[in-house]
Image (cartoon, rainbow, N blue to C red; front, side, top):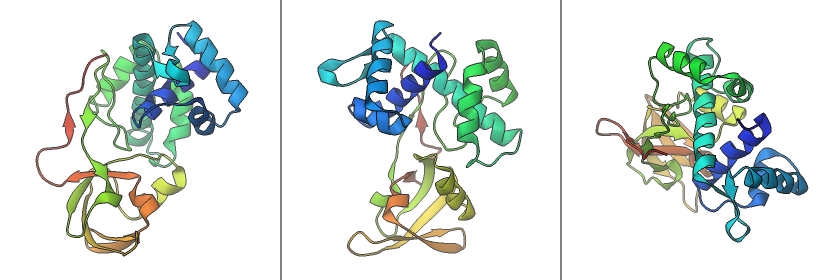
Length: 227
């Protein structure tokens, strides 16, 4: 099993790869470490056969992807436990889950999943990988790309910054919440959105981190591919 440090890197690489090509500089910024530290750690991952370095970029091997999905599964199950059972706020659990995820054995993961009644997503709306490595694909687009009159449902929040999540919670904006876009300010101005009976102005930077889907149909999770 990779060390806690290597697991953190695998998780960061997987998430970054969902947005495109991964470069070492991105990892340094995401993980808050120096460039030489990233270079040394990537060398350890490559030696273990967990990553490849095509053209200087960083890509997970099949074994690396398997390990990344395992740590992501543990992290998101830990977040669900902290929110659903211990009653912590969704803005408080990311760092705590980063500690717990390294201590969850496969046996405890399975028991925790059963106890939580097999949750599909974490509190922030991200899909939880299954035991055998399947992960659901989510459809959606940033709320910032919506147009006036759109009626949408929040799928997930792509930034786990505590202050942002606390702010969204104060507006009642969680995964599954319906939102109507009432108006959009000119020149990339704020979005005026309606949540329930209240209206709020959301800056573009905030709206860009909220992924939404049309508020119709049974849901927005579809079966993903297996590792």
